[in-house]
Amino acid sequence: GQNIDQPTEMTATEGAIVQINCTYQTSGFNGLFWYQQHAGEAPTFLSYNVLDGLEEKGRFSSFLSRSKGYSYLLLKELQMKDSASYLCAVWDYKLSFGAGTTVTVRA
Amino acid sequence: DSGVTQTPKHLITATGQRVTLRCSPRSGDLSVYWYQQSLDQGLQFLIQYYNGEERAKGNILERFSAQQFPDLHSELNLSSLELGDSALYFCASSERTPTDTQYFGPGTRLTVL
Image (cartoon, rainbow over all chains, first blue to last red; front, side):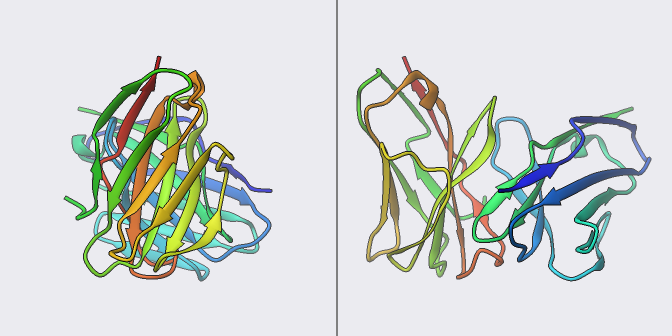
């Protein structure tokens, strides 16, 4: 089966950095995705990691350690519009999502 | 705008009924995925089609079925509806494989009364 864990909620201040951790135990692994979802809207793709290491895309970075079953999403220079749910998802033969981490950015 | 369209946006129906949700993928995308998102269960993968053929199956109930047509649009059929089927149903598309970026449609909100 699949078990994907991420914190339920995180709060940070505008301009700060927040790191959202994701640990997973899945029967297979073909990559890990991070999605952003604003309330009532569709998820939007942020990043994809299949090899160990750090992938950087502007203010967002994602890290993967396959041996540890661990990933994190780093959000830098937080803006109010970054307040959203962040979903970690693992692809084995299907895409399995974590429950999501709700990030609240305060002024 | 992701380029993925879903109709209808909202659907209200009664228990026991049957509904059909429709999805048109982005131009050029061959794979279509269906997801269900409810408050208590989060985002759940239902099924994937690739170029008209079923490719992967997730937590899809036997009361639910889907298909992808030659023009690549897809339909998700939900029958014998129960209160617990009330959820947001998303369709997503990608070029080919699930490791290609998936683009999500705006979703269909289904309410079963």
